[in-house]
Amino acid sequence: MNKVHVKTGDTVMIISGRDRGKKGKVMQVSPKEGKVIIENANFVQKHVKPRRMGEPGGIIKAESAIYACKVQVVCPRCGKPTRVGHKVLADGTKERICRKCGESL
Image (cartoon, rainbow, N blue to C red; front, top):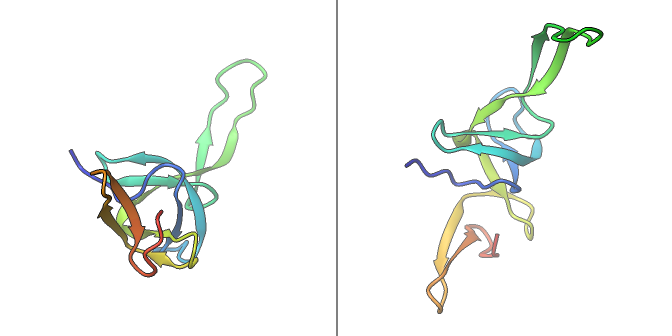
């Protein structure tokens, strides 16, 4: 099983590629491929055929998957993109923390 450092619902910043600097929310994570889909980022054009009578065809814009290594989680407290650290609490549970300020993610 492959692990990915981001989860669905995280706010992330793209750190490389043509959409570098954009922030967005993670909509879907695919650990097997190591990719994530971020809302309002990495748009591609899809050519769609009309499937039913009266349904329009044409070119639509849709979000595409991007490699998870190209995104970093944005800390809610300091607002900076950061690596994710882990901290074991007293009751034995793990917690994700910001590497820059130590705040819980």
